[in-house]
Length: 80
Image (cartoon, rainbow, N blue to C red; front, side, top):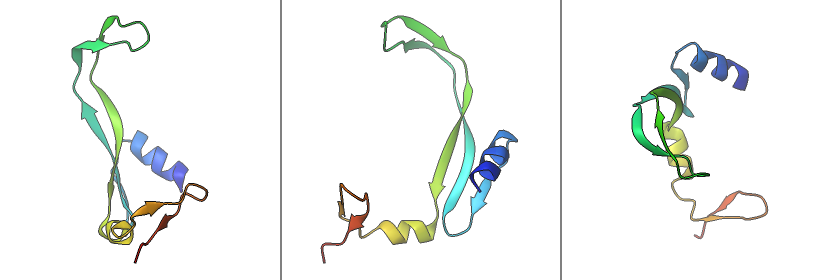
């Protein structure tokens, strides 16, 4: 499944998994005043694509009531 999502994005497609969410490529504008965090030097960054994810309605509803994260399992808990 991940390989199909990856290939779809690389082909410029929007990949939708019903009930989960949508993966898409968004364009970031280029800019002249970016900084290299390691050296502090000013560098120019050309416009480029970035992968983006929008959660679907069912995923949003499923995680809405999670109020804590269990450090061991990473699974959220419900304090009700």
